[in-house]
Image (tube, rainbow, N blue to C red; front, side, top):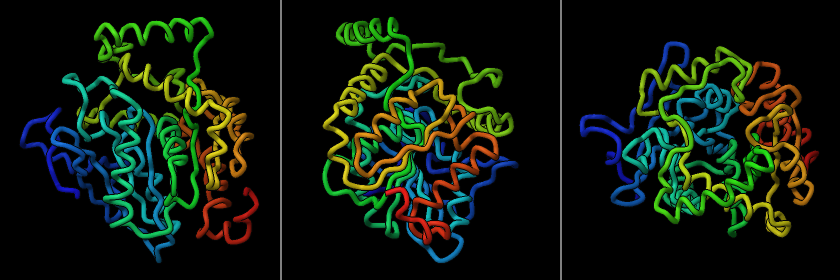
Length: 336
């Protein structure tokens, strides 16, 4: 059961957590409405629905990356609406306007990645299967891609296909750093320091040499949303988040993991990714019968926040893979 409720953790009683934030250069897509899914007395998840502009060909559910929020995907949502899809986007626990896990709301914290998986199960059961129009397709980025791969092996999957943008199948770090982190994070958690931030909470990333995108306009728009509504901002991850992420990556790294995936998966990977490993994503797809990888040269991590020619390649792949789009009517089976 889902209710329109207010999250308890980060705001005053007068703040409407179901609002959608708009900017002059990035208005709310047509028909957009936000709601809250109550997971427990303390955990509520914000999600938003955006209807197709023409006859509906199905629903694309967007699962974002770490630190992201619904508003960041307005441009993508409009492009999905134009293609005849309903679009739905959810804020993960600990980010966006969903409940935050720590009193200092800028910390990117989770107790376990299993909590994210529980949120997906609840969203699919209570919202997607009861309120959305089939067929269902998954569009997931980075951390969201990792979580949705974990979800894909759990059993019967309501998604017809999954497109993963720069999925977090491994986090880029040096060999020495990885060895140190693998020892320190469980030790710090054992000492009760799982909530310790791994970085400056006040720091906002400058555009110069950023590892996300080479498009200054889209980068500035993303930052402007958090300037207008600081409650959207998440910065450094915590020890617990990193420890949980690395434990979950061990699960997806098992060679037997990919054998359990029974739906077509298309991975769009960034050729210049400095956050997650593109080679690991390519090797992963080789182990999965129904998976393919397309590497887009010259792109940083955020394919959908990139320059127009990068995004055009993403959408060309989308249209050739997702049934219902015009291009897919001709080549829908070419990738599977």
